[in-house]
Image: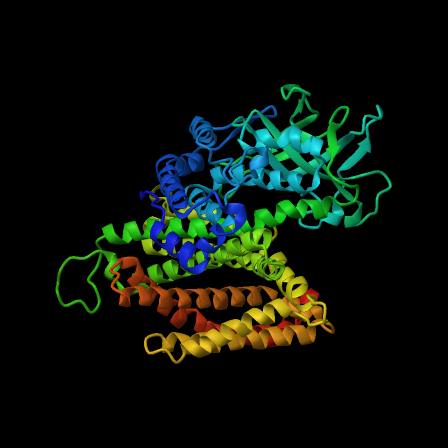
Amino acid sequence: MSTYNAPLADMRFVLNEMAGLQEILDLPDFAEVDADTVDAILEEAAKFASEVIDPLNPKGDKKGPVWKDGVVTTIQEYKDAYNLFCENGWHAMPVNPKFGGQGLPHLVNIAVNEMWRSASIAFALCPMLTLGAIEAIRHHASEELKEKYLHKMADGTWSGTMNLTEPQAGSDLTAIRTKAVPDPSGDGTYRISGTKIFITWGEHDMAENIIHLVLARLPNSDPGLKGISLFIVPKFFVNDDGSLGERNDLICSALEHKLGIHGSATSVMSYGDNAGAKGWLVGQEGKGVAYMFTMMNHARLNVGLEGVGVAERAYQHALTYARERIQGAIIGDKSKETKPILFHPDVRRLLMSMKSRTEAMRAIAYFVAGNMDKAGHHPDAAVRKQSQAYVELLTPVVKGWSTESSIDIANDGIQIHGGNGFIEETGAAQYLRDARITAIYEGTTAIQANDLVGRKTAREKDEAGNVGFTARGLYKDIAAYADKLAGDAKFGDVGKLLKEAVQAQIDATEWLIGVYGSAPEVVHAGSVPYLKLTGIVVGGWLLAKSAQIAQAKLDAGATDGYLKAKLATARFFAQHYLVQARAMATEISQGGESVFGLEEPLF
């Protein structure tokens, strides 16, 4: 078994050189945070992830929460770690200072959150969902509700959930049937009744109270999305003095039996089996889906970060095994020395694939986080607007491409272990089982891809009526960079491959914009390949930039090994992944109609 070590050198490099950490820290809203503080935070988070959270991962996998008569009992190690997590202030770190948080930049939070997800996705899901609930309440609830709930949610005393999915609905929120009826007392509250499924950490004993955000329909509401409202439904009522009151009419009726993330309590929640669970309306009636998307967008970026985290962990685990495992003669090695499988050509290929893709995923995620900070805090309105456009365009890519890639990367980790990877005791299989859900929850890959090709590209218009202006602008910038890089003495080969890849991206983008109005179904048939193409091209662009920066530092006298690694991973990614771009563009533009080529009875 291996021990997780946060890749601090690469994290710092991406934060400082790729995502513009100092530019973010120079913003007025972050005047009290400096680079030394950030560095200290990263160091302490790395220790906590390695020493406290990482050992939980196999324990939670083998013995997860236990359900009995509606009560869920978490393993003691999780409870101890959660208490320590909150006591040390990690839970409150990303929260607005008004409610007891530290208000650090998204860019700093995303690096720390990657560590939690590498160490244990199952454990990290609890604070992740609470923070998402905090954001939804902070943006849309009344001041009274904010004061009542956010302070104790911020410090982790209370946790939070989001309740969307129902047995008959899946991802189709228009099919939601949970009801909200005004309380007969006329006190302004509502009685909630219905069943929600797949509710992560919906019931547990780590926090004193659980604040559920529940989507439900009011009587005579619109049958579509506009008829859905959002309600705060606490497990325990909160008295005026902040103490806990009686239990609400809600219960966990079962825990789901899952492929992975066994340590987390994925609950079936039943509301209103008796008089009706009491809930408080968030914002306006009929705005529930829009409000919940505040939480969903937070969750989608963080689930994409789960992909980065589990990929990094699977890579480290496989690398440890490859350094230790002695097996077979090394092809092409004439030294006749006994060497580990790390020297086998295909093991090297697999490890380079895992490493380079993980670094590309990290670069995109941090790039988006930096733009989130500029979108929310930069004094220049034009910069805020452009940054927000990048966040909206690339969030589906972070979520969709990173999670899909993490599954492949964890699978490669098993392959490096050979037969031992198929044996649970080696630990490699857990990363694949845990990674598999990331491409499903908080919107499947197809949902992310549909959003990317539809709302974020083909249906995006600026004030002048220019369609897909954010995507077209970004790819134009990448093409200009690639054209310049193609003439570079040291990275001309990478520049030429990037130039060809981004042209494929541009061709695919122009095709889908041109076809979308007349045949949207054909475009959407290729939406997932388009999302993956975007991840490869944007990831390849950022890795190429990182290699140039690393080379400049080496030329200036730096000797750090990770800088030399940057050169190798960027070139490997270009030669193994950017080269796939043209074939993917062909699949997108020419393969859509064949998706519908088989009549339904012939399946």
